[in-house]
Image 1 (cartoon, rainbow, N blue to C red):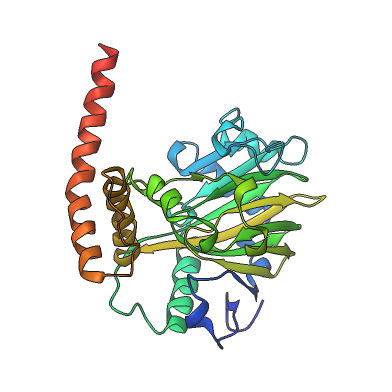
Image 2: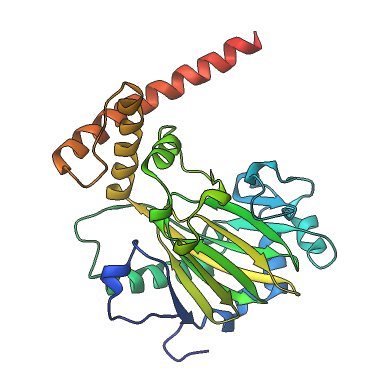
Amino acid sequence: MHPDGPRLFIEPAGFSERFDREPFGFSHNLHTLDLFSFDSLIGLAGRYANAPRDYFVAAAASSAATEFKAVAHSQWSVGEAMQRVGSDSVRVLLKRPENHDPRFRQLLDTLFEQVIGMRGGLKGERVVRLESAVFVTSATSITPCHFDPEIAFFAQIEGRKNYHVYAPSSMSETELESFYREGIVSIAEVDLPTRDPRLEHVYALEPGDGHHQPQNCPHWVATGAGRSISYSFVFETDATRARNRTRAANHFLRRAGLQPAMPGVCPSRDAAKAAAMRVVFPIRRRVNNLTAKLRKV
């Protein structure tokens, strides 16, 4: 283990310019930590038995272009899935391990402090979500293409993984608006064949390798010939959430026949749009919930 404790070894030159704009690789020493041993993770998974919202179990996809939500999932409990990783096609996602093991809380806080320190602080932003995840995946498994509404730092712990990630600019504004109009934090489907191959970054990750994934980066992953263990931490700030709400407002403005400016062009208008959607989202959720209840009557 490195004498300085858990660390991401990121080149400081140009970090601020690349942060949340373009994917880039780095190295780390997280693979030396005992808490990532498979036996330790078996024990961690045992703490998830009564927390079904904190884990996700799915089979591998047939291809990177498979619809994310079309892949079979929830066929095993988290404990059963962990035991089948070596014999079946299984992908296990242990969400928010920091809520189940204090060692992961310490790790998350340490790494986040390092990244924000390199950025030069939060620069007036406020963190609204900070969490991590552990991925345990069978050999030769594919996770289909999707994007996540969060800023991420990803570290390979065990095994090999080919990680294909596209720059955020590979997503059109209308695609992003269509997703953010729902006002949710969730997996977003991506039509892989329509991505520009010139914007693709491919990371052949081995233990000790990692990469930074900006918000809204489409990506898909294929594990190597052995079991894979990976770790990531993600976060959102009030500024990134506001940008999401601006895109949601633009979706409805576009449907009304207008041509709204993309986020960042006019900050005062962005703020007005984001504030409006802060009011609209709860109303839409209540209407949707009521509609769902009435359909059951």
